Amino acid sequence: MKKSLILALSLLLFSMVSCSGSVKGINVSEALSANEYNGTLFYKNPVIGIENAADPTVLYNNGYFYLYPTTNTMNCAAIGVWKSKDLYHWNNLGVAFKPNSDSWGITQLWAPDVIEHNDKYYMTYTALVNNKKYHNIGLAVSDSPEGPFEEIKTEQGDYFHYDFDVGMIDSTIFVDDDNRVYMYYSREHTQNYNEETNKTESWICGVELSNDLMTVLSEEPYVLSKPELSWEVKSNGCVNEAPFMIKVDGKYYLTYSGNGYTDANYSVGLVVSDNPLEGFVKNGVDNRILGPDPLSDFVAATGHHAFVKVGDEWFILYHSSKYPTSPDANRIINIDRAYVGDGNITVSGPSCEISYLPQAISGYKNIANQATITATNSVDKAYEKFLNDDFIVYRYRDDDKLWRNTGINSTITISFDSEKSVKGILIYTGLDDSEKINYCNIKVNGAQNKVNFFNGFIGTGAFEFEQELSTKKIEISVSKKNPFSISEIVVLGK
Image 1 (cartoon, rainbow, N blue to C red):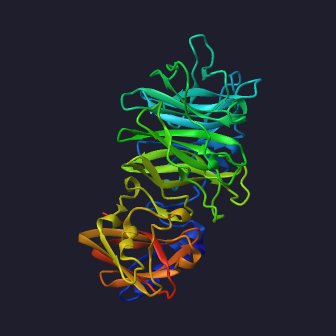
Image 2 (image 1 turned 30 degrees about the vertical axis):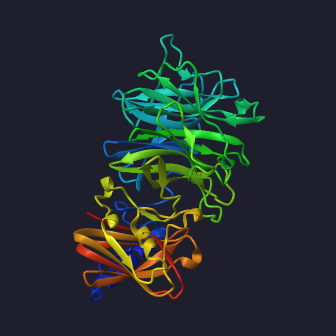
């Protein structure tokens, strides 16, 4: 941390402590520009320290995150691994996998996926087949998530890879509750001409594998999703790629990316089924769970993702364009919270604001949903439920899920049934610039302080209390004559 920033923050904290009746703590939003905030409580996109990377997959193992992306810095001739305890500080461990020089594919290594299975760690990856113009899927194994991963050989001594006599990319392995194993991948669109549409298309396909992953048990691959919706077939071709499977409460949630990664509208879609290889259905004409907003240039080309569960919480990792207004192969890694269940996935993103880490890391969770929230000067009292519904509005199509006020100073009261230990608070405004706020005041146990907002895509105010406070009530007051809105209030506590 720079000395000037330390001094500024120290003076800020001192002023808070010295003012009688003030809440002791720090305005987190004021430290955002230098990325200097409590990395064991908060995080912010994009991931710091992982440059020029894409197609992330992540393994959460023994309290650590292991991130394996496509690494342009290694010229796509090797796959690197990064390790983190908190999603904030990432340590580059170097090369996790590099194929042997006499292997079947040694260039264009893309889209790794790593799972723990049978007390080993298996990596599938995409590589260009030597002397051919299409890709296949390789398999490597390690005793450690850090690697090194070594290619597996067949009984004949050949380097093993999945070859269906077609181009294959973007594989992922899913082990079901009954220990049956499935692989999902994308048919490479340059090698897949659809006579019905008169176009080249990439499709999401799936097969069942043997428990050792080396035998395909399905007679033919199952085609699970084709590009059919308007958002999937824009400027960069007809694309369904980068599948990822999770299962919750007996339902199979298959997510994928559509469009093309250099298009601003590259997004993540969802199909759901009760069967791992059949019956997947797209919900309506727009089944996206993550994508850029057409009215924003803060983030673009959000796709090729993976999910990870941390404790009871789901997170999605994905890449976006480093240059949102002119997307290209320069990409950055992002992490956002996801909610899975009832046949749908909701993502709190794409975000570029301060957010809060999972409870398994920070020791705190969002307890606002345990409180009763009321507000003065509501446009509609029924909409006060949106203040603590665990849903941050990131798309204009969802802006009916906001609390709005009438343009008169308002106070929002958060009341708990019993004393709660509270460490921090985050307040998210709506998307419309005219409805954002620059600051608010928070009041806890008779003491108060000002919270400044960072107004990016979403206006966000965040405050970390110097110590845990025990309280049954928090008040948030806003002084603004014009109408404003609040999307969500998060209270970090126990």
